[in-house]
Image (cartoon, rainbow, N blue to C red; front, side, top):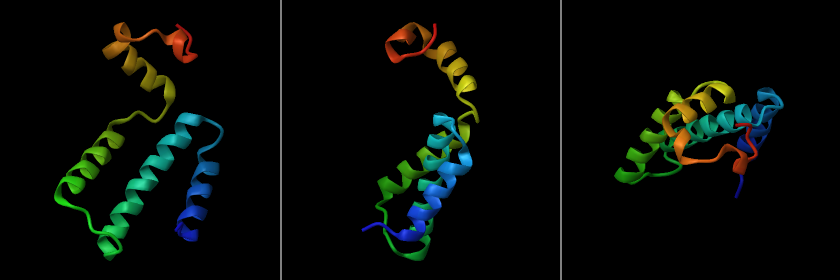
Length: 93
């Protein structure tokens, strides 16, 4: 069942992030990890050790992401540019 407080806050953060799809995705990913941490602290959910490790890795990865899509694209192109064809994903070359 969805928690109305969480749903309301999620919608609020999407609107606050603006029209940019990357900014919205990043805001929601960060919010999701915050909410999972809160639920663990409050005892609403219990994570197994491996789940706790994965949550930490996800949080670290989110912290490492740039704030805008163009910066992410530059990073992806620099590290993985030879592994994909941008046009096949609707991206400019």
